[in-house]
Amino acid sequence: MIRILLAEDQAMLRGALASLLSLESDIDVVGTAADGEAAWRELQRLKPDVLVSDIEMPGLTGLELAQRIARHELPMQVVIVTTFARAGFLRRALDAGVRGYLLKDAPAEQLADAIRSVHRGGRAIDPQLALEAWGEADPLTDRERQALRLAGEGLSAGDIAQQLNLSHGTVRNYLSEAIGKLGVGNRIEAYRLARQKGWL
Image (cartoon, rainbow, N blue to C red):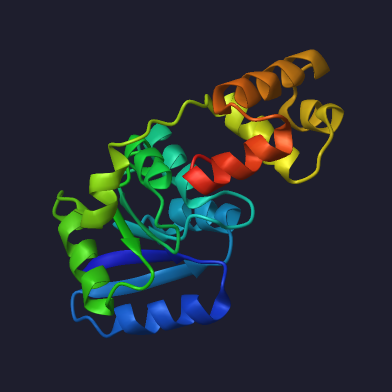
């Protein structure tokens, strides 16, 4: 049996995915989580073979979860299931060690096949996205991305500095760098463009 943990913040979708995957004779949904932090706790407790996760969740994103799994060398694979058909997200997912990346409008049997494939050590990537992913590269560093994401949520440079445990000047530098790299006029435009490209 392939043991699955399902991380998805939308309750109805989480329930539907769990029900669909439970119909597969070789897949066992051992747990579900409604946010990234809960998923991280459950991953360590349940030690599933495969994490099936959304990207955008409260607490930790699916990509941050994948990065943690890689950093802690946990013996499990990650399949991302998302609405975000953006090449930037896929590139970041692959960099984080994600083995599967599917869109939520894919047929249910495609998800089950993807889980089997990554469990065997293969990959399962949406083919159209895979082609697009090798186009435009993400110019942002991790710190610039963090600062920009918080700026887009309406936090001031001082609040961002406090949250990231950095000096006010360092945060201003990160935001200025991001604005310059993206060729826009201010941090809100930078946030919007980076979101649109899938870099946040």
